[in-house]
Length: 233
Image (tube, rainbow, N blue to C red; front, side, top):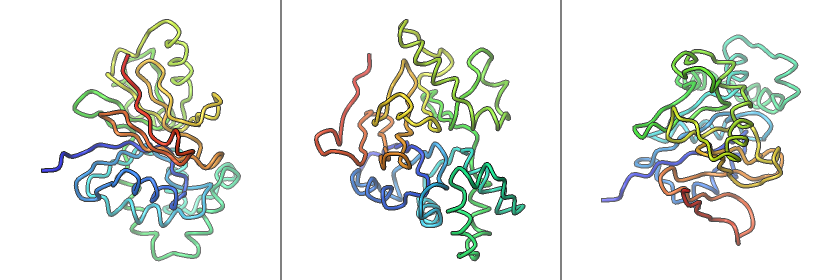
């Protein structure tokens, strides 16, 4: 019997072809494997509808809401088109739905199933942006703006790394939202017990998927560093 695997994927941003190539690289099983998306499925890239239609076929799919997902959802429900959304990659998503209106209703239902966070059985937290580490997490569960937009948690993790500190509430934390290019990296990065999984597909073409248990990751880059394993310290 094949052991179920659990993967977490960084911000896809409508890059369907790259996502499918990663699925092929890890031999992803749509029936048995679990996929946790850290959000921002849409915008910036060319194929938002294809991305969502494919993810809807995964039986064990966990979607963490990203800020771009929220913009898309508000458009589908209320036809909101804020300038901030359009200027940050929303134009491609808007055009896709205008040309494929038959998908809108089912995609509204898809976005309504998204979670603001997910905590698994090993007390690992998956969230798009971050949270305020100074107060208990259970006091922030409904703070959509914080959980989808925060970048301060990443900065704190980088500071903690210098002093061998970790976030005590969770065994591990996985975030998207902040591209690793902001710290001049192109692969998933670990600071303390926090993982940055957004490798900036819309900036560099690099999309990453990581096995939650083994920490083996694959992304679209040079074959020599296509697959690496981070050893736990």
